[in-house]
Image (tube, rainbow, N blue to C red):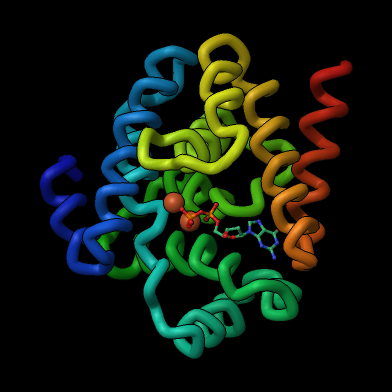
Length: 188
Ligand code: DGI
Ligand code: FE
Ligand code: FE
């Protein structure tokens, strides 16, 4: 699928603000893919569709998580987590994308997972550092991403966990597992 067609499908699903965010993630993911030797076309498409399900009604997302057999513990944690697996599913069903690597990059863009692929890391990080993001610490992660993808990713996951804990929010276990896996990898 070409970029124009993908963007057209996504635009009608999103607010203008979220669409601009998506364009930022797309550009950032392409640039990271070039830098780190990932498939640029797959990075582009995964980035375009990563928030496809962001504004679906909660009930619809819940039904998809139940009927498609996604981990049911998602339902016990913040509904913000749901649009990632549901987005992967709807990208397949509604947009007809079947590439497993692209769908997994969408699926794991919020929590990450242990053993993330290069493409998954790129989409996670692009989502975090795209130019429209302005939260504390993002510039540090942007700089780290120039030199070391894994270090930047560790920082991004760490910041996300800190951010959630500061707000007294629960942290989905998979997010901790992602963090531990990345740290173990980095110290060999
Ligand atoms: O969809 P975006 O806003 O572009 O970004 P995202 O998909 O990375 O994150 C969406 C939200 O999910 C964000 O407000 C933080 C929250 N989140 C990320 N990881 C966890 C989480 N919420 C909980 N409860 N637990 C997590 O592990
Ligand atoms: Fe998202
Ligand atoms: Fe996003």
